[in-house]
Image (tube, rainbow, N blue to C red; front, side, top):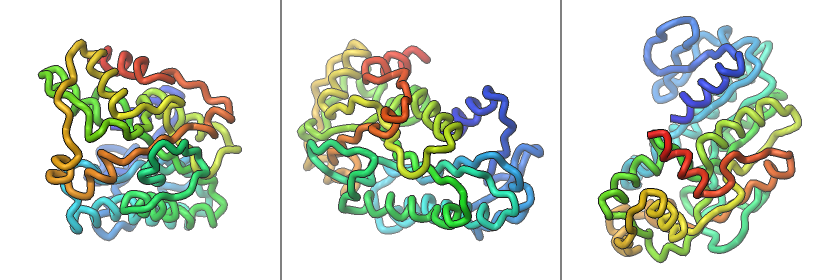
Length: 291
């Protein structure tokens, strides 16, 4: 979802693109790379002279219950692929000056009402440990002098894909409701502002390190539920109790559905970034209007 949208935005800026794809390439604008297999990028010379690299990786954290096998898949799809790409870029004679890598606000873990900026400490649990490993995997690129930016994404509000595509039908059927107590904080960002953040970090050479890619106004799950129901003109009266979520989703319930992460985009705001959708109401209106 995000890769295609970012590629479109870069093309509109007049940039030529080289896409890394798992399947056989269709044309000279694609290069085959399957990090799930041996991971080697065999035609390294094709990466020479790039002006930037953007890496968005990772198996869907909410697609399956977190068994040991699926947690390994979640980890490998992020950490292994990032490390291989970083090592590959570091070997180039003319590496790209910047590498932008996806990360997540899951780095901070379950922190209650604490306001979390870009420099807040790592939390505890599988998700925070995963994000820390994910970000550390780009170190070979940084050691080679490449400017590395880690974008810690919040929940992405987009019409096609992401959380909204799963919830809209439920809410329209009157089956929407809060998760657990509803008091847990959700850090979110509109797809439009996420894409703009990627372009902003690519085009500003002074930016490196971690960037909270979230809107300036996080909401509680109850506030999110209320606003989505209001935007769809539907009631939201069927809460999902915490015990039921834990029964169905196991560890994922506590770390992905019930965890409270109140992250704010301090660095982006300090750098002068202007959000097109600073509030959830604006983001939902824009996303739902795309139907």
